[in-house]
Length: 161
Image (cartoon, rainbow, N blue to C red):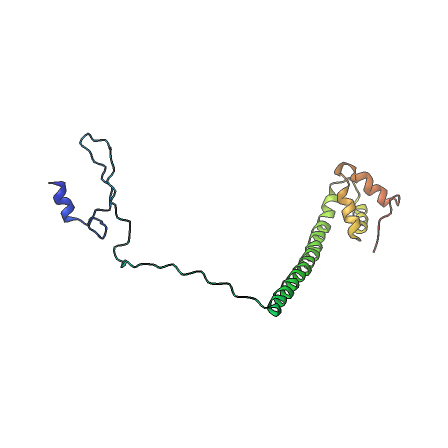
C-alpha cells in the first residue's frame, strides 16, 4: 500500500489555506535536516477570521473636590476599621493561645517529681493568672522542679486573681 493513498483515506489536519498542519521531517538519509513549517499563522479552522480593532484608552474622568474628600474619608475609615479588627482578632487569638497553654500546664507538672496534691496546688497557682503561665513556660525544663517547689514552699510569690 502506498502511504499517499493511506493519507487520502484518513483525516489529515490542515490549515484553512489547505497546508498540512504537521511538520515534515522526512529526508532521503533518514535523519531530519529541515523542518517545513507553513508560513500562515495557526488558527482554528472553524472560527471565522475577523479583524480585531483595539479599543482606544479611555480618558480619566476628573474628580471633583467633594468626591475626592469622600474617597479620602472612606480610605481613612477602612484603615481605622482594619486596625480595630486586627486588635480584636489578636485579643481573641491571645485568649485561645492562653487557654491552650493552660491546658498543657498539668501535663508539664506530671513530668516533674511531685506528689499528686502538690501537682494540684501548683496547677491552681500557675493557671490563676496569665503572667504565671508565661513565667512557668519561661523557666527552662531542667529548672522547673526547683521553681515549682519554691512556689509551693512560698519562697516565690506569684500573682493570684
